[in-house]
Image (cartoon, rainbow over all chains, first blue to last red; front, side, top):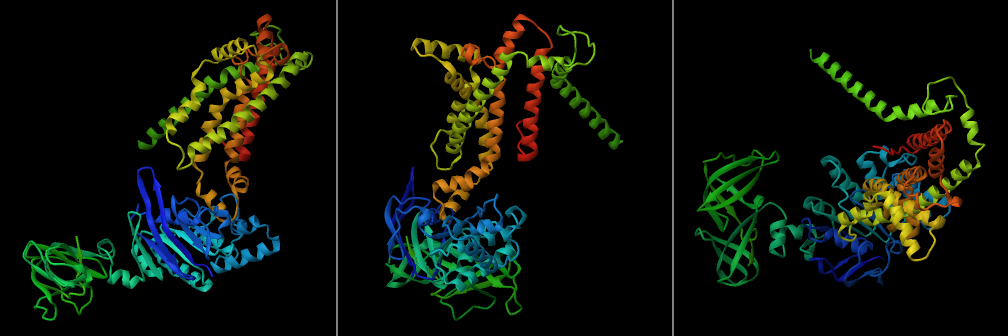
Length: 356
Length: 266
């Protein structure tokens, strides 16, 4: 069964390296999201997998066979484009049946496959329409149905939800995941939206500057970032810079210039190193009384309050350091106003320390 | 108050349009009217209505032969120009293509900047310097070079609305490069290709200066024959010929607009 392996794939454009020695494996039936800021190489990676770009170095195998030099039409890989790229001069049914027509399949077989694909994306009865007569969400479904109608060995999606409005986007996340699961198809989705990646993927591959930073299940990406980039990029994060005063590999005590000392966890920590601590906003407790249970606890003053609906963000100052705590908007949690004195507290496990 | 100012604005705007159209169309309307005037000199007072000048065209075999030559030259030149323009526009529009696009587009449009009589003479001189006859194909080539930039502009406009991702979509669905052009690229660009061809055809068909030094009695085009005719005499038969050309060009433009929704003139 299809398993996609990229080994040491590199792609250079004049002046910069878009994909830099990238190795990763997408397992059979797995849903992987390539996540990263714009320009991180995720779309180039997708285009190399599809065959629209050639790798300058490295190789790709699908299902054990080398596809590095195979043209796109020979790869049996379905692609959903950011712009959908539907054929405007063909009906929905002709769009979906295009891949089978190219394969010279009999008309009756194609028609049946088109019906099936339309049912799969819940667009029954719209086969005779032209793409321009459909809404954005419907066009998206047609693009998905067209890519799936060839029964591809692999499904690629390039920012498929970025052109949809917020509510539809949430709906399609669930829908795409449902379809992927029901077919058991191996899928790779490119996105810059971390909540999308965390919600949809079996594993998330975080990329930065053409390099793979970490590839792991969503919870691990969020809670155990492997690099400072991932720690900073995922979630709403407080970053505090200082010098490691004590360290024994896995745990350390970070001294901030302001005099605060933070207990945190990390890897390869050594005393005397410059390091950064990263604390997710919602992992910081903000209370009136001193929170005894937390190794990191500091008196602070609330400086700014931002009402977010589901939560309330408080920016606080503690001995010159500025930290934001995100509290649920719920009666069980205390409310504060700018100027209030309070306490900040968090555990060592929620304080990830990265050297450098 | 506001309403009356708007009404006045519309009136002035409408008047302006009428004057503009009169300025452009007036001479044409005059020529067309003259072609039905039985008076033998041109221009002359209107004396009645006759179709005899149209009938007279068919008694002059050189006009019919020249019409055939012009049509053939125009068709070949337009086909050649559209082919070159399409390939150039494709290369200029594709992302990840070669650099220096602006310079390239200007270079491709440069035939427009050289006086056509000069081009015509230059080609003749160059050809005779090398001892080769220009002949029919020299005429076709000169016309093709001159009309190509017009096709290029139209086809570049077509490509501006073309999402190259559809080509990749076709490839990923199993369409090879040729099948992709046949099924996706060419059908989507057909309106601008047809418009480009028609526009080039018309421009070549009515072109005089390029043909001046490049035609022989065997390859005389319609404008050349008309030019020779009015050098010796002026009568309304030439107005009848001109009217027929205007009619044909207007029909082609209308058909394009109606069936392909292509505007030759924006």
